Amino acid sequence: MRVLGTQPEAIDRALNREKFKEALERNGVPMPPSRHVSSVEEAVEAADSIGYPVMVRVSYNLGGRGSFIAWSREEMRALILRALKASSIGSALVEKYLGGWKEIEFEVVRDAYGNVIAPACLENADPMGVHTGESVVVALCQTLTNQEYQMLRSASLRVTEAVGLVGEGNVQFALGDGYYAIEMNPRMSRSSALASKATGYPLAYVAAKLALGYRLDEVLNRVTGVTCSCFEPSLDYVVVKIPRWDLEKFEGVEESIGSEMKSIGEVMAVGRNLAEAMQKGLRMLGGFDGLPMEGDPSYALEALRGRRPYWPAWASIALAGGASAEEVAEASGVDVWFIKELEKAVKTYSTLDPSPSSLYAAKRYGFSDA
Image 1 (cartoon, helix red, strand yellow):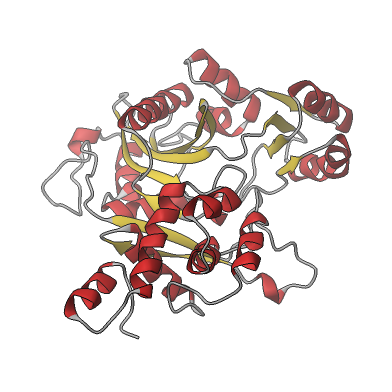
Image 2: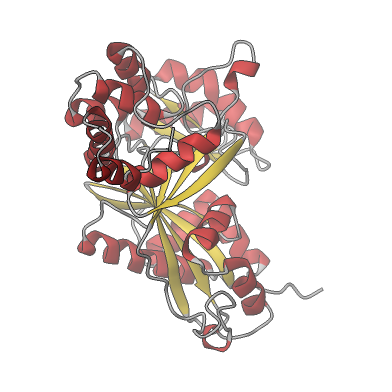
């Protein structure tokens, strides 16, 4: 049987943490200091060598299953066995924990002839340590400098070549004091569906054509109808993805979000600015009327520090209660730019009156008629 598109050995290279690291090192893409382990003692030794805290990732799994952050040797011993059991090959990767760094994701498409582009750049508003499926994601990236954007885009193209992707995939990076490649999905994913809708670039359609042997410049973009698929989209709007949780339905569940995915769905909202898209998204989740929420500002800051779901709601409560954008950013780990965008909406609400100019300003920031 002949496999079309990305070949089995390339899938193995992307999903086996050890092989992935070797392939990237050969192509000059940095990865966090890490060691491959297959026993409790190896994991403890690796963590001692790298230095706590460490991130433990599992090969060949979905939704971050089995992954965790170990802050001490005791936590490592308590949790590593579950991680090893979650792996189909009984192994895991212990790597340096990059808490507080930005997480950036590039959607990439590559044909069998080496032509490759990055149609979408997605920015996780939540910091590293939170699974992408648990994070508020913004398209396109909002807080990167042009130098950072070009650096990560070039690295994402090198990763696809190192793996041997044919079709569509996504590459995730940590950006802070330098950058590291974190992982790659050599396939369509939840992020790919979001990126397709957000950009108007039909990733699944293009990936299928490339798997059949077409070149990128031979595939017509079915959305625009006039451009070929080798053009990267340019947007004049902001798209926000907000996950939804139903944790209250389960007894004894840990309410803070982290490296394992607990969300049960997500909404996508489009606006001319971040606040407009964020407010639309919050209303679609149900139970939210928009910003600002009512509540105790000090409790809201504690909720942000504890990584409770729906940080935009907690952030708006804290801001409305007098907390500064910098205080909210420090408590949540979210880039202060995102917090200041929400702060504009909160201030707009506090000065709202029936005049046309005031109502127009409110509508620009996504407030509902109610």
